[in-house]
Image (cartoon, rainbow, N blue to C red; front, top):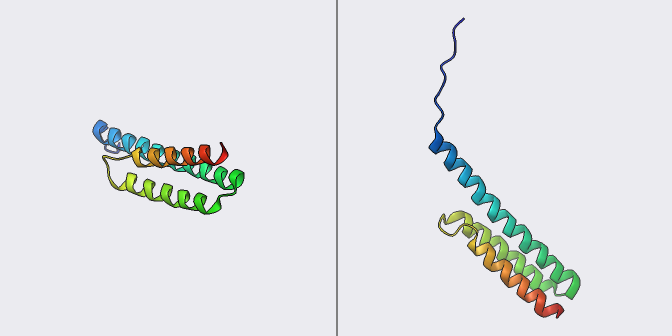
Length: 92
C-alpha cells in the first residue's frame, strides 16, 4: 500500500490565519455592538435618523478597519464610543 506524502505543518501560516480570524472577529464584534446601540437609540429615543447615520458609520468603520491592517478594531471602537455617547445624551 502506497502512503500519501505528508506535508509538514507550517506554523507561521497557521499563526497568520489565526491572527486574521481574531482580527476579523474583533471588527465584527464592534460592528454588531454599534448596531445594537444604534437600534436602541432609534427604539428608545425615537431618533431614527441619527440611528441610521450611526449604522452607516459603523459599517464604514468596519470596512476601513478590515482594509487597513494597522487600524483593525480601532475605528469600530471609536464609532461604538460615539454611539454610546449619543445614547447617553439622548436618554439622559
